[in-house]
Length: 599
Image 1 (cartoon, rainbow, N blue to C red):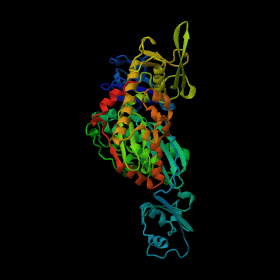
Image 2: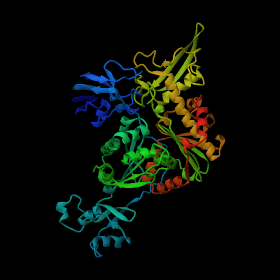
Image 3: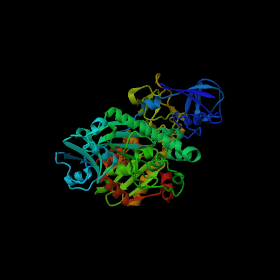
Image 4: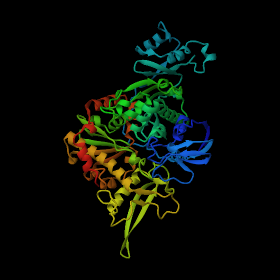
């Protein structure tokens, strides 16, 4: 049977397997769709619109669907069909690329060396011997460098090579450690570029950097296509175990290639001048990128294949010849405290902190570290994707039309209490859902107005029902609701984060007043109303005046890695002094988790 898929301006015509559900067929044909629950039929996010044809749909439970709307994970094609997938999420997603900028003296591993060529140039036994004699060095040479150097003393290269150096009076060589890796005719041609990449569970952010100057030349970001295999890393591991590790790996590789192509187009640089790509992300994201089997990371004792830094060739990793350079996969501390946290701590200079500081990256996992230059304790808590909208009925990502800020006013009329809901959306567009910062706001506002009590239940004296319609008075936006189940999701997520903080404080042996600064990283943290986060107990109130928002610190630390060679040693120091705390084996975590469930 044949399936026609319309997604925005793109149309796909594919053959399908009627024994597989629609979601499986879309994945097999590399047609990307969001499926946060990994096709279990619980999130209601993989909606498609049937335009023509016959299908069979299994029970979708309490998920509300419009006319001709179906869940891809519950649908089986019974004839040739035409369906439509919304591409709103892909087009309008807001991805955090900004970060706290540090003053860094560029000092990368790659160096540019100019060498004058005169008529008495050839004084050694060979051209490479002459180069080393002139510079008093013992450089080795790559084949690429030798090919270009051969044009310097051979006249036939003028006719055969567009890179001929024949009759040049100066050459510019690029070296890495003790190896000459490339040769150019002019200084302008011999720029040294690198690409820093942060692979997040939901999003991928990338920057093209001049490694000599530290200047950022181009930026781009993209949704992580692995979201079709589930919103969280465990769902993706499960898919890789039961169905196809290759599919999971290839999806993020394709995203990265697409992003690099965008960087090259927008900067208009010569791709031959890109000498390094550095990739940071949580450890599971990196394992899946490298196509490493990682079943062991989903079960106790959560053993990673490697936490070490890894250098590979671009083609070896991506099976793509877009670039010819090395790729560095940055190091992790443990299976669940990954390179994104190591990079973030490096950007926040944990390697030389005199005072004790707390670092928190709030996302699908709540990864956090506490310490200074002498001692660091760190952990990860499974907050789940609630803060990113995945398990919330009207939850969506940070896209245009997402409600991202809310407050509730109370008025008394004729002895009755009325509530007026005021909200803002991303891009001031009509409301289509609610994103992470809005989820925190509505929870805090419901609590402050007395609509819910400290246990999270709707107070029957102040509110009749088990949900609140945020857009009741808005004739333009879609119906956006916040339910009792949504509140429970938030309680679980915020309790996991708060309990992790408390466990680290206890393990380190310090109190709130001992902390000098609290760094909050990540896209969710960047938009967070900190006072409302404190109202619901996500962040201790005592720490509010110590908080510093640092943005995408993972990307910041990755940029530092490619422009300053000392960052590698700084990361090593952080890893050497860091002690990972396994929350699942901590006797105090369960009691802390229960205590922190209430608001």
